[in-house]
Each structure stands twice: as C-alpha cells, then as structure tokens.
Image (cartoon, one colour):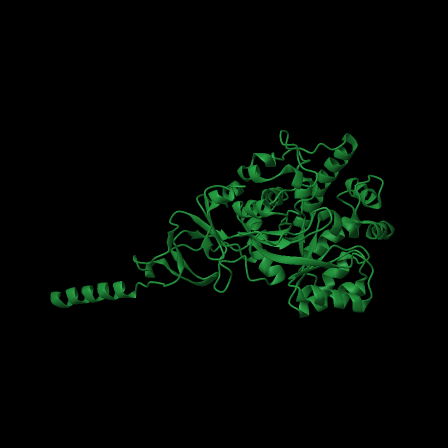
Length: 440
C-alpha cells in the first residue's frame, strides 16, 4: 500500500512538472493583481495568480500563473504589483516628439487624436508614440446631406476612427452622419449647436465633449443658436461667453438642468468634460511644470500656458475671474450629471488653455474624482470605457486586445497619484524605457 502511495505521489509530481508551459516568442507578465475596470468601474472582480501571455502586440491569453514554466524567457514578475490597461487620452494633440514622450511617460498608450487652429497640426512622425486613433470632424460649416456623406467617407478612407459632429449640423444631419459613421465602424462624438443633445442621445451618438458644450440644452434656444453660429471666441462679450455667464449664474435647481442631467443619466451616451481646460484656474490645482516630464516640454509650444513659477494663468484680472467662476460652476454641474448616473470618458483637450500632454490627463482624472467618481470608476473612464463607448479594441486586459499595460508598484485604487510613480509601461507588447523618454 505504501509503495502505491509513493508511486502516486511521484506520478502527480511528474505530471505537475510536465504541465508547466513555456510560451515561445511571447512576453509573459506573471502574478500581480489585475484590476477590474469593467462595467464603468462598477465591477470589482480583480484577478490574482494569473499570467498575461503577450504575442507580438496582442494579448494572446490569460492563464493560471502556476502553469508557467520557471524556464519561461521574457518574463516580468509582477508579484505584489498592480496591473491595469494603459491609459487613454480621449481628446489630445501631438505636436512633436516631446508631446509623444510626455504622454507615454505618464502612462498614456492610446489617444483620440485631434488637431485644430489653436492646437496646431498633428505630428504623425513620433517614435515612440502612443497608438493614434484619429478624430476628424464634419459640420463646422454648413453642408448638404451629400457633402456630409462624402466628407465622412473621405475621413474613413484616410484612416479616421472617430467622427466629431459639430455645431452646424441639423438634427436630421446628425442622425445621417451618425448612422453613416456606424456603418463604417467609426465612433461618434457630438459637439453640437443646432441639434439638441437630447435628440443626439436618441440617435445613439456614442459620446459628447466639453461640459460647457454638452450643457447647451439648458440654455434658451435663441442663445444656443447664437453659440452654434459663433462657437469660438475669447471675447467676454461674444455669444460663447454670454452663454458661459448664463451657466455661471445658473441655479442647480433649474428645471432644465435637472431634466438634462436626467436625460444624460438614462442615455447610453458617454460624456467627456475636458475640465483640464479650466484646471489651472482652480485653487486646488498643482503646478504642471513640477512634473518630471515637463522638463522636456517647451513653454512656447503650449497654448496659453501656465506660468512656470506659479503654475497659474497670467490672464487679465477680468478674464481670470470669469474663468474661475465658470470652473466652479462646471464642477457643480458635473456633480449633478454624475448624481443622475452619467457615464464618463477622460480627455485632456491638450493643448488649449495651458493643458499639457500626459500631465493634463491626470488633472482630468483628479477632477473626475472630485465630482464623485470613486477611483475604480475614474480608472474605467481612461481604459475600458473607450471600448464600451466606441468599440475600439484597447483599454481592457482581455484576449484579443492590444497589449498596452501598466504595471504599478502601488495600488491606484488607494490613490490615483500611484498611476504616475514607479511603473512599467508596456506599449504594443514591448516594455518602454521610461528614462529614455526624459531625453529631449
């Protein structure tokens, strides 16, 4: 009997040894806590004792760590560390290599890329670079239906993944544009004027951008139309600023605001506040130039940058006061939207109004926390929510998704500041040299 017990023991030992596997031509991340960021951050099923198998630039499998052979090459032991998808900045420009380096250094592995007159021309030559999912617009000028369709198809053929539908589109045209974009597999964002956001929610538009813009539904129709006709101006007497002043003085008990908040909460559309645009004017702001990666950024590249010493804007007093008051009210308005169940995406709107690559995404995450999202929900706004909103195959630790991963020394669920420090960044299946990113 004893002989058979020993025989059984050695057979079990032999089988356990032979079952351990070596994954060839693969990077393996073993152990660590894989933080669950699914379901808008409502799910809490973190994974332990797992190994992430990466082949080329894709997650090939997630297996039990105990099945990995000790002879596995290209192994990262993440024991005691925390793993989550690389961050996404949902609205940003890259103007030069320093911008790309700053984004990567701050853990941003994917961006929704934008360019504009204020942000400058998008620089596609950076290497290394976050993955770029380009946004292109339609509706910044009045167009016929056929012109709208032609524009969307042209954008798609040129590689755009996201369609930004803008102020001049009528409700019928927003519906037309959204439907065409979805046929082509593109995500959709609304920054609307002649179309109510309530209507766009019913059409199924994926997301809306900028608190001040997607709050237009609370303004009188005549005011919204004037903003749609002239949406951009820093003149305090412009239609845009008259509307901003309306928002600044709006009661939080206003029926239109409460109704709009209810509509957002009930819809499947995500919202992206881009509060980083006003972050510097808030009393709780931190000096962005004190971030280590800021040393490679040229202040002359930044639109309306923060003062390097104070970390604040050097706006004229009247303009500064107006932005400060607007910022305080935006925070309260967003808390109202959050209270009613709105779903969020994070985006920095870099580099307008002093927002800075990589750095300002973390400012945005801080503000999302301040409006009431818990840390897991905040993490979801910059990771899995982008897959849920647009259907893009990144932002999740899941088989078939891009291998863009952060391995953190400390738990970001305890403190979002832990996203910045002592980390490993995996970009498209390869570990980045973070110190090299600090070189100009």
